[in-house]
Image (cartoon, rainbow, N blue to C red; front, side):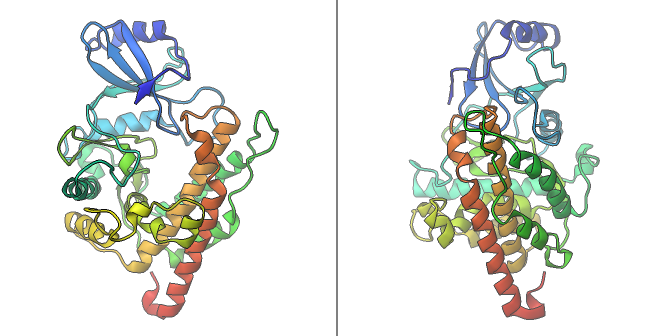
Length: 375
């Protein structure tokens, strides 16, 4: 999955830095860039003398839209903290915040030889393996949420309460900047996510929010951010930790299970954002969303209300629309890392419409259930 370098780096300076600071990596290096990843440019480093492989993640070049995004130092610190837990992560090798080396902060981690699936339906595996791989993904998330930040020296990694309100405040700052980004060719600004202000107002109502909980959260936990064993049906590593913090575990749960959620959404189907493989019974071996929730709850030892899950589903789609707006903004400024950035950018508006639809569904559920349905 690594190929030509789209965002050049100064290889001579990188090799010099490694020679002086990271003796385990032998130079000279062969460097390629991964094609996936929407945010931080990611490179495959191969030591020519030893053929040992490593992965480098760096901030994007140029002036960044937000100081809160692209925090590769957070990625480094969280995977380093989790190295000796039962959560599978790459080994953290080094962190460099000297921008004179490759132009931005970067870190290097071990390369995990295994399988990465862009399609969460896990094509070309047996029904038995598909079920086992999804179960492993769900249970691995439960293990991660079960790690107490204080036990790994990360109690100051984030604030323990009011996660969703903090998210709303962060997204407000980010979205405002992203909306103003102007396309370098057309001169047209990216613009707001549809129903952005209405969705923000709804989610900001404390009475509607899920019960406040506090765990580590990954921030973008999904199938294509995992490495599966080369031949066996289980997760050997979790990738892309830049949005990790301490927060509400439902944010990760609903992000992972979003393919199941959108598969049953008429709006998602109408705009091509529903994967038909996740319609119940459509794909041999595919678990249901309800089974995944049970697997997760068996690991962590708590349960969520149906209305809590629906609220978090709606928030996850809202959050996804802001992320897609960010991709659109980086694409407009020609800073986007992924080869498919243009395709993702075009999905910002349909995703925003989906989020508003889910809010309408949640309000209907709450009205139908009266006080018993309130979160």
